[in-house]
Image 1 (cartoon, rainbow, N blue to C red):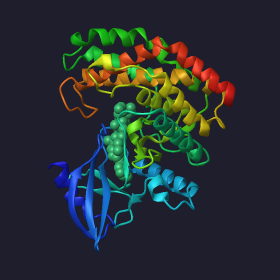
Image 2: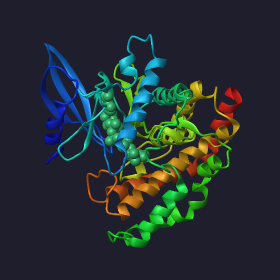
Image 3: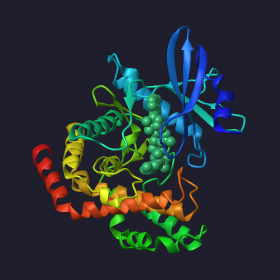
Image 4: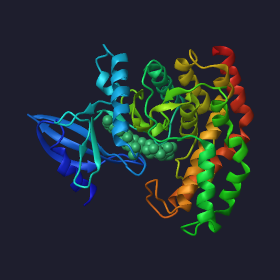
Length: 370
Ligand code: ADP
Ligand code: GN1
Ligand code: MG
């Protein structure tokens, strides 16, 4: 049965009142199946967002939802008093039986959120001001979650940003070469092999205690942040499936990866892609306006490096998935994951070429704010 039919079968299960006037696919996420529904609620138009959780990726959807309820509840508490609180954090719409999900006829797990109106998500940043808003929103998100307390959040994907584990998975995929694609990816494989050592820098620092474990988003790429269409303010951090213990630098790195580039993640014309130091500065200024208060010296030391590191882990994961026959990420065309990998490698090369500028910017910001 297709996803839309499955959704039609579960909509009844959510505590949503009124008449459903239509459902359509929504967004450009690589993982879950996302839809938007339109309702007529006693004359008022309303929308909701529905997602089927990708169970290949998230093997314990119940734990994912338990985390999300805690996190959204905590964030809502921090935002108490604000008139537009329900636009600034996700709100889970419960099922009629009180659960936070509804199961479909195939056993799939569905959840619903209030649809946050008047927002968009960006694939590319168009100004330093936007970059600063995005940085600030993740700094604030980390700060707000710092006192979430016990128990520790579930690790919804264990070792998610563990580069060493990601390299092991890559080498295993290369060895199997189950889709027969390794030969045509020789240059990318060579690049990732050559850069394995430096790739371990964040995970080693975390393991050795030079940077602390913190609750972070873990998937803080730009299009997971909802932007107000009117003001360009980064209003709401979404896609909370991977909020769990990690490093603040995993989020900073993912922001650097997606905000400071001049081309989208799957752009094939690599001549259009470069690292933009002005966006890098603005992004970090925004992030630090919230995070300078809690970052420790070890985190400052690796701030610039985090961008290269998270770009590298994504390049590695895209290539691993390509070698395995595209089983993890949604793809829209043959070779999509290889294109994404090439794009990430080009971005690392551009960051390398402008490394002195990046380090100088961090030094200046540290001098002014650390
Ligand atoms: P995936 O895990 O597949 O990436 P996301 O949770 O990121 O799915 O959702 C896909 C897209 O839907 C996001 O990039 C965002 O633009 C949009 N989105 C997510 N939640 C909401 C919401 N509550 N209201 C409006 N748009 C949303
Ligand atoms: C996936 O779900 P989405 O599209 O926001 C992935 C991230 C990658 C990203 C690359 C759970 O994010 O880790 O950085 O694609 N999410 C998961 O664009 O694997
Ligand atoms: Mg997403």
